[in-house]
Length: 217
Image (cartoon, rainbow, N blue to C red; front, side, top):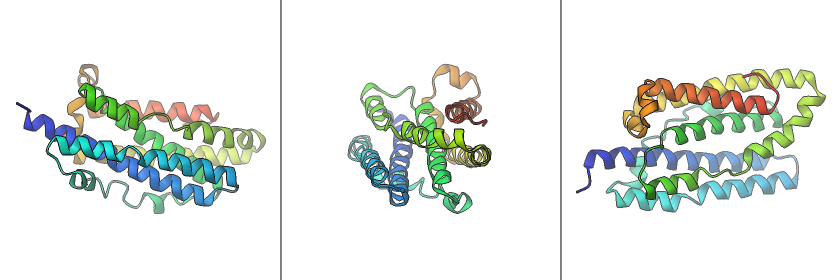
């Protein structure tokens, strides 16, 4: 017989996955609208469509577990809060960096919390988190600009640290408001303090993404 508590924890986690995918779709779509050229608009629009494509499967999984898809996703509706207002970009480069940093942290959060799912659910989550190519797109766009303009590089380093701090705060808030999210950590993570282990994992991932751009986190 299915364990209701286990099902509730999985539904809560799938709600987070679903909300972040929807938020990523919205963010990539908005970024596409601001892209300075047609190739950028098309590329980001295709990425947006890819983020949305997994919602049907996530909805089926939630329903199969006896949950309500919109309720599970809606419990995270306030997660991003006024993030956009607090991190309003002043340029296309800052806009690219904001999405790269923030949704990189959120994707790392999704991965960190999904290490002990059953095979079916784990496969669906793995497909949801498949590399969209966004990181490569951003690095290819920003690397030459950063190399050519030291002042811009310095500003983007500061900007990346600011956005990274905001994104880590979002993740911390999610863990505090949804303790069931920690139910699927592996033994090493649980031994490392659960939430503290996740925060360390996210900070490490953020530093790695900044390093790809030659910037200090």
